[in-house]
Length: 179
Image 1 (cartoon, one colour):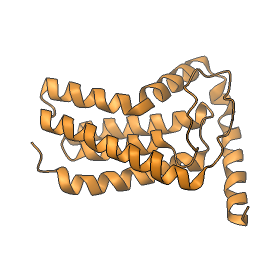
Image 2 (image 1 turned 180 degrees about the horizontal axis):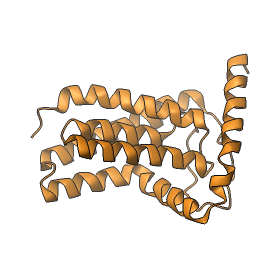
Image 3 (image 1 turned 45 degrees about the vertical axis):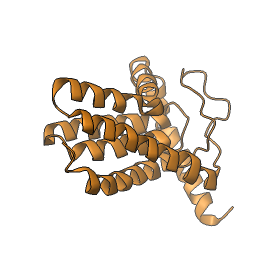
């Protein structure tokens, strides 16, 4: 393993230790377990797309476009990028304090973080600033939840967030005219 990888691993371990008090709070465990679960398969973002179309915040073409784009982002990340790195998760068997699904893919980068920031950026091209702020807050909580529940390292969610935001920025260039 390279010196750079060793330094990243050491930083991840140190940051993980700082989160241990959060993992001992019943309320925060509930919040992060739930956040992690609603991020599975981008479910929260698909619900937001449908509810947005039903209440007029989004159009149906936008909701369908979001769902299709999220499928493409997931395919690229999970069947492409993650296969290159094959990083082991912080807890191979999981942590009994948390009731989250145990993913079968590599830890790096975080798919939850990527899809959350991807969706938040794409949605930001179609909604008001207030909604954009709400979506970014959701994305941050979902990404952070993956470290709190010990499914990802901090570096996994940082890179996943950046990848998702970059892919979302590219997608926005092609979707701002969808009404």
